[in-house]
Amino acid sequence: MRSLGLAALTAAAIVVAGPARAQAPQVEKNVSTAMAMAIIQGTMEQCTKDGYKVSVTVVDKGGNVFAQVRGDGTNPHTMEFSRLKAYTARTRNQTSAEFMKLTDKPDSAYLKQIPGVVAVAGAVPIKVGNETIGAVGASGAPGGDKDEVCVLAGIAKVQDALK
Image (cartoon, rainbow, N blue to C red):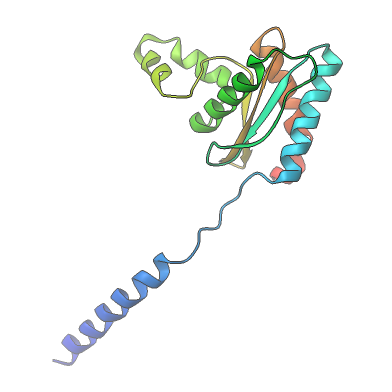
C-alpha cells in the first residue's frame, strides 16, 4: 500500500514538472550581427581582390535573411540569387556545390523541387562544430566556384569564433 502511494506521488510530481520544463526557453547558437558583417566584408574583399563584383547574403539558423549587401556594379539578380544559395546551404547543411552534385544523380534529382533551393555553387554553411548556425552565399563572380572561394574567405574571418 505504501509503495502504491509513493508511485502516485512520483507520477504527480512528473505531471506537474513536465509543463514547467516545457515552458523553458531554448538556448541556441546563431549568427550575430558582428559575425555576419565580418563574413560579408571578408567575402566582398576577396571577390574584389579577384576582380569580381558580387552581392552577399548571410542567413541565420532559421534560414532567414540576417544581413545582405549588394555590391557596387552588380546585376540586379545577384541579391536574390545569393539569398537562394545561402538558403540552400543552410537547409541542406552542405555547400550549395555539394547539393548541386547530389542533385545531378537521377535518384536524388527530385530534391531540386524543394521550394527556395538552387543547385548552384557559391554558398557555404556556417557551423559551430557539427551544428549549422547559418549560411553565406555570394553571386556575381563568373561561376559559383569563384563565389564559393570568396565565401570561404569571409568565413575564415570569423573562424576563431566558430570553435
